Image (cartoon, rainbow, N blue to C red; front, side):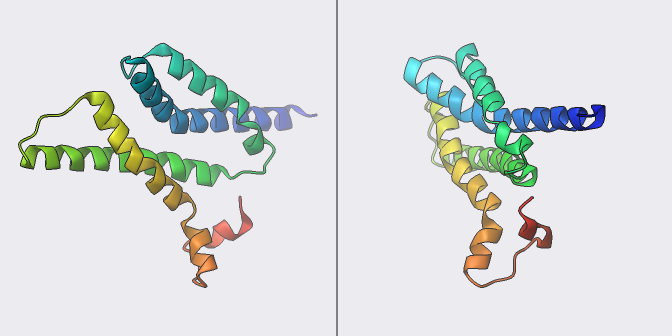
Length: 143
């Protein structure tokens, strides 16, 4: 094993672990806050998300799963979460209703954001099953 392959595998591992952490941490923190009546910034769910992200990075390092799909998922998750949060605040403001709690508001935004992020990741697969051309020709290789 050369230094170059070792470094490449290390970078793959770090990218996968960070990407998975960014994708898992919101769900872990909201779930813990709802279950334990804690704040959104509690330490145990963040530690659990880091452990799961490190353990779950193997398929990315082995080359079975696509970094591109992970990146699309994380970006779509945060964009959809922000958009859902802003839309929710606008609806509450127009109805002249106060925000119930930050944890419930975040849970509602994530309930919309996770399916939207999954749809963004698998949009090309759905298009192919419908007989349409994929949006990204590079996606045909799966990596």
